[in-house]
Length: 476
Image (tube, rainbow, N blue to C red):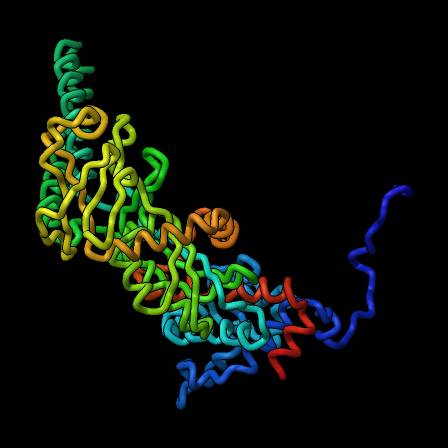
């Protein structure tokens, strides 16, 4: 063993430092957690105080520090936090050697959700004051996070139809086996028949339950029922057969510092109604008068773009190609040029398409343009399969066209968006582990997400400024 580094003898008496502070270095991130919480006005943020009567309770600052430390170090369970408080020197230093019971730790998070979310916003304010947030450009995106609820405990019309088909196939298979068992010897046939009849009865019982659940799903507001976590929803993902049951987390990330300036947890399976909402949240958080928001095509919505323009927010978002004309080798809508002065379109053949009708669909005022000379046009086979080619234009289409012009002038916009916001989701999901959320119901999940966002922002600020500078900024 002489050529290896050897450890000390376990039974050897050592002279250890008497001060716990000696075991926590000046660069240790736990010092940032300690100073940040100590500088907060917990009462104004809404944290509940200690009990006025009975046994004294733990100070909210102690439990908040414990949760922040645990989130920053991927220790999210209240039971694991209880264990860490009794064996981890950093936690002992942070809490003054206090080791709260796991139920006390869990109740603190449940009872102080709004205060935790306010604390997350307070750190964003601190980052803005120290100059970490540029405020000019943010990237907005949403990502699906797994809930406690499994897919087997979530019911939708499609899932019920699939399960009913599976149960019916199983019943037919067992009935066939029952017929085979009847032709065997008496003793063997009796044992197999008893077992198969029990399984068939269980399947019939499951079918009755599924029919009852189908009735309940039809009366549900969004035609979904989740048993374990009632607020979790089945959501589709890009891969075939890779859908999950969970929540849709929206974030707005500063393009310069990669600090998450705003976030929200929803149970909607799409991002189409979140652009203006997250843009306004980001604008309020950064205090910027003019804010540019980068988003992907999944958030595209004409109404949302118009709402951003009215709020002083400049959106940049690719428009999805929903028409099949281009894919089939025909002219697409971009091939038709609009003339605002005459309110007409000019087709590739040079024909003028005047406005013919105006309709309202899904609350949007749509104008339709077409020419009566399409049937005699030599380019008709390359344009439409109908009698005439009709072009639809939203009454506020100019805001979408202006956004497309901005995107053309900024060809690297989507590359900036990708490297800004998707890294945040990947990092937080890696910290959260395979199951992502540990809590149930939307308010509790929102609190859990705020802790993760706060931990991410804190680590990001430490990486940019360093522990001593960040602590100095907090105390200054």
